Amino acid sequence: MTNENRAVLFDMDGVIVDSEVYWEAFEDERILPRVLGESGKRPEPGETTGMNFREIYAHLEANYDVQVEEKEFIDLYDRTAREIYTEHASLMPGFRELCADLSEAGVIAAVVSSSPQEWIALVTERFDLAFDTVVSVEDVEGSGKPEPDVYEYAADLIGIEPSECVVVEDSQHGTRAAARAGARVIGYRGEANTDLSLPAAGTVVSGSNELRTELSRRLDGEI
Image (cartoon, rainbow, N blue to C red):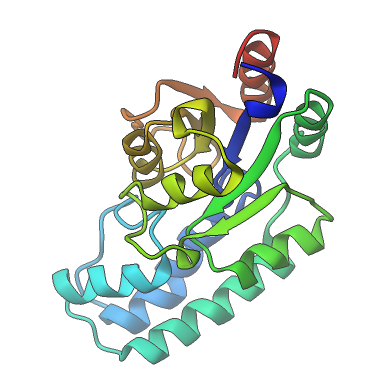
C-alpha cells in the first residue's frame, strides 16, 4: 500500500481537543438539569458520548422525561459548544507534532466528527489546524455514530476503502461506528475516559504519547 493510499481519521472531541472533560461538566451542571429537571433520571456515563447533539435529544426524548422543546435544547447545546471550544478546550499535547508526522509521511489526515461543521471550524481556526478533509455527521444522509455511515462517507470522499483507514476514537459509539465501517480502530483514552472499555477497537492507547508511538509504528510498515 503506497503512502497516498493511507489515511488517519480523527474524531474531534476527546482526541484532537480535551473538550469531553468540559462537555461532561457542563452537561451535569447546566444542560441535563434544564432538560431533564433537577431530580430527573440521568443517562449513564458514556451513554450519549460520540452522538450528534440532535440525536442526543431524540435519545433523551425516547428514554427520559424531557422537559424542553428541541429548539431550546439545540440552542442550549450550541451556546455551550461555542463557550467550550473558544474559551476552555485545549489542543491535545503533541497533536500538532503528530499531524506533522503524518504530513511528512504523505498520509491523509481527516476529521470525522459528530459535531457540526460550525463547531469543528471553531477548533481548527482557534488552533490553526489544517486537514485534508473535514466531515461532520450532519453532512451525511444516514445515521450518526454508532452506525457506520459517517466513516463510510468519509472514506468514499477521500477515495480510500475503509479498510485502508485508521480511525482514532475515544468513545464506544465512535469505535463501534468505525469498526462497523471496516476501518482499523485505535481507541484513545484521555482524561475524560481513563477507565472506559472500548471493545470495538483493535488497539487501545492511553494518552497522546502512546497514540503517537502507535501511529509511528504503523507508519514504519503500513497504516
